[in-house]
Length: 168
Image 1 (cartoon, helix red, strand yellow):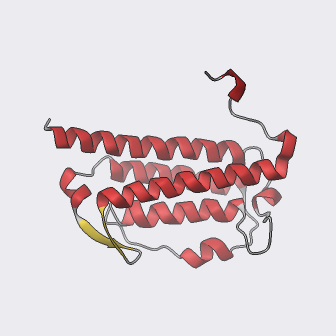
Image 2: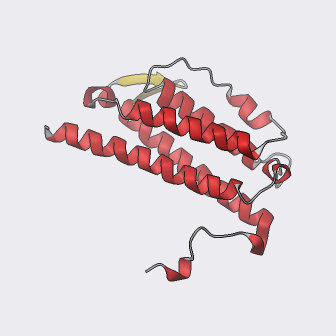
């Protein structure tokens, strides 16, 4: 396998891995919250966890599945933020799991040429490489926001997935 193909394959595998890990963190948070907490907003102009999950799904749908995978772009970005809930934990979890499967399927088929090809996504002129990089970074950033909102609501009741003190 030529080196550029090996690099592309490793890049795409790591993008998929990062989305999977972040989804696991979000799932861990969702499993600690009730449906009411998923719609809680720290202030009226801020987003709830339910809004953030829908926003992440919309972003990956638009940037990776439609933008890279050439599927129809059906995103309704304003609705991701305007929806006041209620949000159902299982519904959000199912949306994330479905999204992850579809994104992984797209990423598993991307070629070196497709990574370098220019395209317009959400009005931005970008390459496939940059679109994936930015979408994964965006996903991970909002994942940490979901962790912070979960911890804000649960306080000392928040359950860490691991004990940070035991990590070397």
